Image 1 (tube, helix red, strand yellow):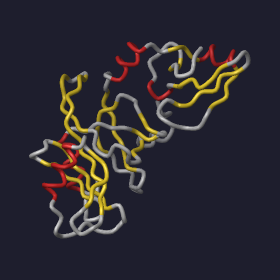
Image 2: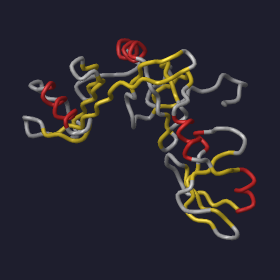
Image 3: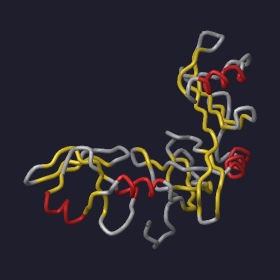
Length: 211
C-alpha cells in the first residue's frame, strides 16, 4: 500500500466513500477522504476488510456515471430543492451538482438561488456559460460594472479568479461552461454552477434512511 492510492468500500462503486492513503504500516492506515476532510486512523486489518483499491479505470468510469438527484443550499432555511445530476463527487462533504439550464434558470427565477449586487449569477449568452461575480470586499458591485469585458477576461484566463474593477475594487469571477454528460436519459447538457457553494442533499423523509 502506497501513499496516494485511492481505496473505497468493497463490492460497490461509492464515490462518496473514497479514501486517499497517506501512510500505512503493520498496524494502521492513515487516510483522508478523497474530496476533503479530516485524517482517519484505521487499524490495518479493519481497513483491508472494509476497503479495496480502486483502479484509475474504475475511478474514471465512476466519474462519468451520473444519476438524477436534487440539492438544497445550506443557507436556505426552507430547504427548497433544485433538480440536478450527480456522480457522487463532493468537496469537504458538500455536494457538487450539475444542473440543466432550465432547472437552474427556474431556481434563479423563483429565488431558490439569489442573484443580486453582492453576488451576481446569470447566464452569459456570448460565453455560453453561467457567470458568478462577487466583490471580494463584501460590498455591492459598482453600477458602472463592465460585465462584458470582465467575463471575456475571465474566459481568456481560464474561467475564474480575482480581477480588478474600474473603481479600484476587485471581484471574484467564476465561469461555469457547459458539459455534455451521458445519463440513463441519454446525453444531457449541464453546468457545474456554484462549484464551491455549500450544496446539501435534501433531508430524507422521516423514517427513511439516506442512501
